[in-house]
Length: 364
Image 1 (cartoon, rainbow, N blue to C red):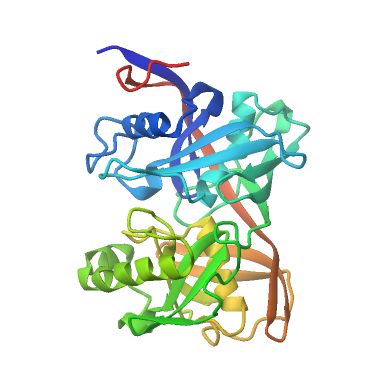
Image 2: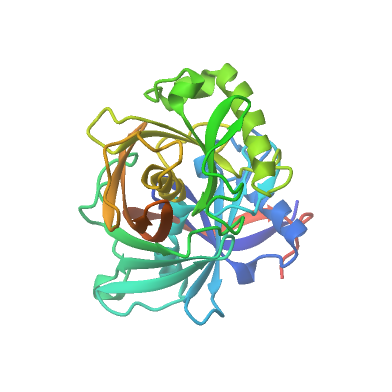
């Protein structure tokens, strides 16, 4: 079997990991690109045994980078979610955890040069149009990975990557509330359908007979819950103007409940066919919006929050807490998200070449 070599960097970004690729090294047509990514990850086997995926949705993600032609951005970030077992690729969503590694990867690839001990990189998430400023530690002209920042879901400490998200409202559907309502009732369950950073369908855990304290493994074993949730998610997707979402990972699904560990709220995030082991960066912004905006299913879940930001919400998840700083304006029923800020970490794990069969693609 002849094979095609593709240069890659392999990074952990937040609580996800995957290959970071230069778009110039990849096929330009979408169908061939999908087949290359399926082979690269090893989709079609629960352990991704013939690829570099890790057998979970958080380890079958791909980042594709290029210099941006946008007046504001330095780097364009194109994301793909490769399914673990189904041999499919979803190019619709973005991923905020993988985005954490975009700045370091762009520097490692030479797509942008460091500018001092801290380098600001302006990133356009092309899947959704969001604009993100990332500050990467670049002491001595190189990316620094050692540091004292700690995030729940990752052992040890690392250098911080500071993120500021802008233009996150309506990136997929065109509206914060694409159904036109702050609460819809679908299959007898009250939900809020929100498009902020990530289109989501959000419900109260109690309405499914859950506490919200269930572990990710317990929720994944609860097939009765999934049998109710997935049809609801698909109906919500249609109401949100997203069409048939049965083969798509968006909209994602979220559960909220009152906090139990001193946070703002208890959350569970679904990708959507299994529970996230911690919490997505994009999902945290959408869940925070649900908690901040009056008239949603999040109204009353937590103690009263200020009418304007910035304010930090502490979102409890299966592995700890994720802090998201939301800047927003609330005036009566009117609500606007201005920006969202998070501090996460990333680490370069490997670099070199990854191989796919030449029968799929013979290279550029």
